[in-house]
Length: 315
Image (cartoon, rainbow, N blue to C red; front, top):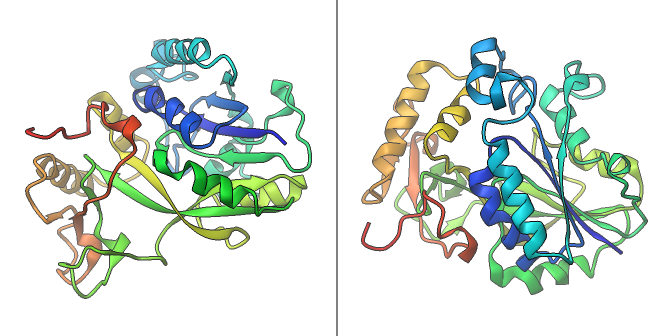
């Protein structure tokens, strides 16, 4: 039984350099696949990509690879040399055939399915019982979860899988969306994680293509009712984006200038980590948790502490 990690990426080299050792220390995979390429309509499938966007964010303005692709290639080459027992693949993927949604509700979903199921193109034959981890370029797991993960895998049968709790981190290791935390009516409480908010697919024990694709197709809804819940935490560094990477993050999503201005202002306030609550959506009432980022305290994976967004003591 093989362990295969598959990840679509675009301009995430600043995280991938830390993610590879994190994956190896927690999942202990046989194969890691990075499918690099631009979703033609953004991550949510609603963004209209124009020539100025392509010129700014793709390598040489060619509209295929991310502007950081040369850095990514160097990171992958270094990892291949450091971890010779793991087959680490960097694949240049083309999503041009995903513009029409077809059987999927969103273009982004169709792209995600393609990026996590192109095994034959890469010379990989799936077998019943293989473990597939369809992850993302900004997700990490705590190094102490290795045995926990293996314990979950030992319980899986073909055509089954597990999902994790997901915590999104904004700007640094301290802030998440307040809506992710309980109780809603007491914004001072930080100890209980809301189990009904967000989850991430983590692993599928391969049996049939039909079941595997049904999991991938929940990319946008993130419900994953077909997967067993676990206490595993996915550390999602969705808004750890230094410099131009943050500009890209905003330009991948369709929001008004007013909303981006408020959110980015809140992120700037969060950079000092001295407030329990930070306003990012001022148009909501104070009793609506979506108005705030919430300061929390979790122990983060050791692999991420050298990322530019991680606040070191004394900063």
